[in-house]
Length: 249
Ligand code: NAD
Image 1 (tube, helix red, strand yellow):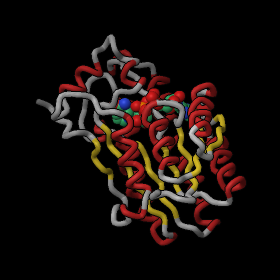
Image 2 (image 1 turned 90 degrees about the vertical axis):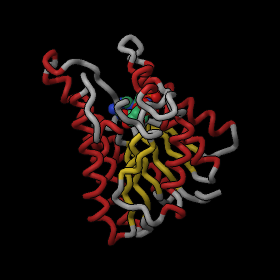
Image 3 (image 1 turned 90 degrees about the horizontal axis):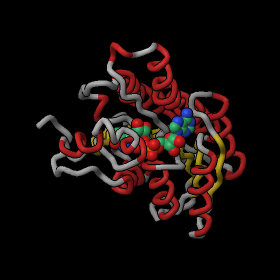
């Protein structure tokens, strides 16, 4: 029970990596606030947690809207009296060649993947400061923060920003006892990739991983739980590669 009595907010907790992390955080003893845009999916995660005897709450959240993210953080602090872990994980992809872009395509992905993480850092950082408890903020980046792939320029921009926001926030929040880290998954078998079946994104990403297969969301969630725990106390400001050695080969 590495997260016993801890309270976590997970954005995008209704699916994929966020959902798997909600289950593993709860297994490790945390109470979980599932902050999710999709009401049905978010409630499903919470129902599953409750049915397993865990403590969880749902709040409908659009991470592109600061007030929504603030409300999720407030729910944790008001209901449980603490906020120990903020997992800024919600994200979307857009797969479209650069020259076919409408500027709005770029705005949409950056607004979720980049602003969503920034809002989460801001709201959670302030709350942890006010509660004087310290805490851990974990952001979901991607191997695409480092390596280019065709058709996803907005995704690259947003995930590269997540990498550097993680380092910058870690520096400023360290005096408050708050660690900030990021994960960089490669290809993970979740709906975000399954949505690009026609483009063969899943197969392509599987081929680029050293063991030739997509990872499970549970495998990523185990690493997130480790990063959230005191066992990872020496990791701060880093983007941890959780990508099975993703490379061009
Ligand atoms: P997913 O589609 O299963 O989960 C994403 C969740 O975020 C969904 O539940 C979705 O409803 C939610 N969401 C989308 N927009 C939102 C918004 N505006 N506000 C709140 N919630 C919103 O995909 P996933 O693979 O679990 O993605 C989780 C994170 O992992 C994302 O940031 C994604 O970019 C990142 N990632 C995924 C992979 C992969 O291969 N699956 C690789 C690298 C990084």
